Amino acid sequence: MEARNFQRDLAQYDKTGAVILGVSVDSPDSHKEFCSKEGLTFKLLADPGGKVSAQYGSTMQYQGTTMAARNTFLINPEGKIAKVYTGVKPAEHSEQVLKDLAELKKS
Image 1 (cartoon, helix red, strand yellow):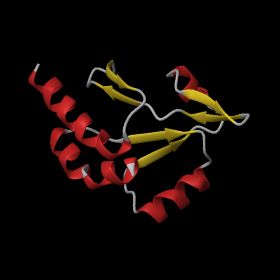
Image 2: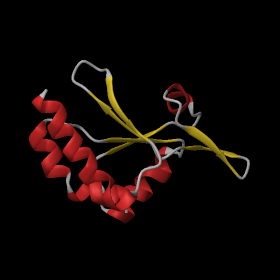
Image 3: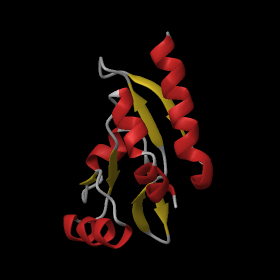
Image 4: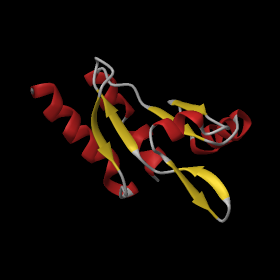
């Protein structure tokens, strides 16, 4: 649901100049299959060793397996993290990010 909503709102993100990137510890083949199944056109980056996810403090253990946590990072044009979202509600998350992006662009 979360990925589908970001896809649904992709044109709005494009208008602001924002880029949507997903990162998970899944393999590239898994990402291709997921994107195809869900009709996603934004990039999903594979981090099978979890290195990038760990650097963002965004890994978790689930039944003995390392997974990427469902966190979102809003990064400004200078490459600095402007906002971090943890424990998101997938149904409304994209709308919240769009609102926060609009507020950041005002300041």
